[in-house]
Amino acid sequence: MVQSLSDRYLALIDTIVDKTLQGKIASTERVYIMLQREIESGTGEVWERCFTQRLEATKAQLDKKLKAQRMLRALETIETQYNRLQKANQQQNAIAFATKKLLESDHSKRITTLNEILDINQKKPLNRHKLQELAKNLDDAAKNASDSKIAEDCQQIAVGIIAGLNSFAQIEDDLVSWMYQSQRNLGFSREKPNPWSFWQKKIDSPLPKQLFKTLAEQNALSDLRGITNNIELRGWVELAILLQYVQQGLVSWYDKQPYNAEFGKQVSYSTLLTFAVIWLELSQTFTINSQLRDGCFQIMLQILRLFARRDDFPLYSGFFVSFSGEYLQNTLQYLSQPIQQIPGDREKARILTLLGYSQRTLGQYEQAIKFHEEALEITRNVEDRTCEIANLNHLSRTYVQQQDYDSAINYSQRALILARQIGNRLGETNALVNLGYSKVFSAHQLDIMDTDIYNDAIRYLEQGLQLAEKAEDIQSQSLGNNSLGIAYVILAQPLSAIAALEKGAKLAQIAQNIYLQGLSYIYLAEAYYSIEDLDKTVFYGCVGMYLLHQINSLEWRKSAGLMTIIKGQKGEDIFSGLLSQHRSEIIALVGVDGYDYIPQLLEDYKNS
Image 1 (cartoon, rainbow, N blue to C red):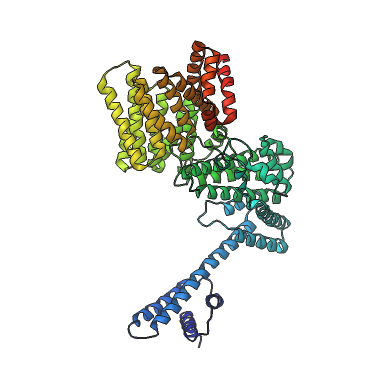
Image 2: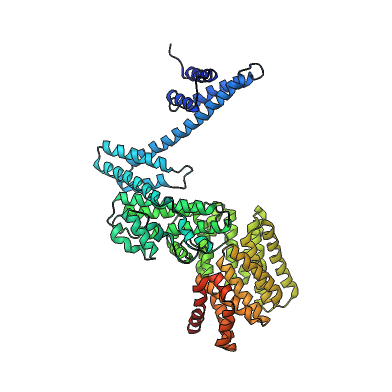
């Protein structure tokens, strides 16, 4: 008589339990092997039903049978090893499925298929061990394939995967050690060393070595065109594997930094954006092989999607310091065009939001409005209310810069209503600050001196600031203090302005928000100038001017104008003396190069 599958599985469970109680099973590994040998693929439902039956029966005997407790422990071991087996089977199935997909895909689509398999946005992306297994499967398939093109592609991909893993292994131990070569900010400075030159010395493979050398020397990746147009598929795959692991390793390390979690996040953001641009630039070097070109572009989109899906995606904060030491205005500008080619979805709306407020920082207000309006349309279609509120707030802030205060008030009011409807505290905080900010500027533009209007505006600003402080949100506290300080400057209340702006500047520095830090400094210069404190006027004015110039914000000219007036009034010697008194403080903020560049910056302003 043929034994049913259920009877077989019940017998297997009983055998393992009995042998465990008799002391004949010395390790959990033996249980795993028995399950692996006896349980048939695709019969998990039958097994789980049988196991549940035995588990419930054993639990029912706990008060009646002395050995029931030991039986229960044996069953728990079986359950643990079964779960381990299921996980292993799922991973094996994933490798088998990936191999099958690559073998069955058309030659022209094979790079696209490979990128889908390697995509780190998956719930369970392949780890290094599984990639090695995939390479082995493809190598075996290549030896048995009757189609020569399939065999060649599989062989090339297999070799490329192993080469990429080996290249990463050469730099893995030194993935972050380059940071400690600098004495400032654990290597997060604008000064060398940078990672590319460091890794270049560690790696043997020609293509990655040349890429790192080009990046280290800050040359255009178009210089690699002669090389990339002649590489085989295996070279491209090696680069894809290597750069993905470098990117993942850096982001993981930054995200875990306890010494400054906010700064760690900022560098994670810039790392993702930097790698997106690297792939975008690489795509433009493949002028002959369109498949490799499109593959580069596909990886760039995957990275942007990964960034946009982060829970901590920066909907309100702007410029980030790059891990290589540069600010990202050029990176963000570079991504503007390809982003427009992507169909509208939640991720695209978030990237457009980032591009929009970054354009505002650069003084590109019309472009900023276009990005935010497009993002706004997408967020409504996909019902992403949080992102919708952020774009309403950014539009409000942008219209303030264009001196269209009615529109600014309108957008901030809409943001405030929607934020309160869904309980979005961050959106409400920004909306309150923007509303107060807009009302101050509106009244000032119309030369209205009604105290009630200004008090009403100040009240909105203070409400927003209270919410930010309650939430311990450094970015929003910085924005709130900055806005409140600027309002007091406009209202000719310099002492109140100084208190708010100094606090805002300190918070902006902690949050690594260069724009808000620089903006706070230039308004501090105005406040101190109004009380005839030229010493602090020059200090704050020069530092603010330099910081804003470094991120290409046009607002550096506002401070440069004030510094030029003081220089004209007091003379070159007195101005230079005031500047030199603060040399050590300025160097602490912007470095020696920054301090030395200030006179040149004023000269550039004068000649422009």
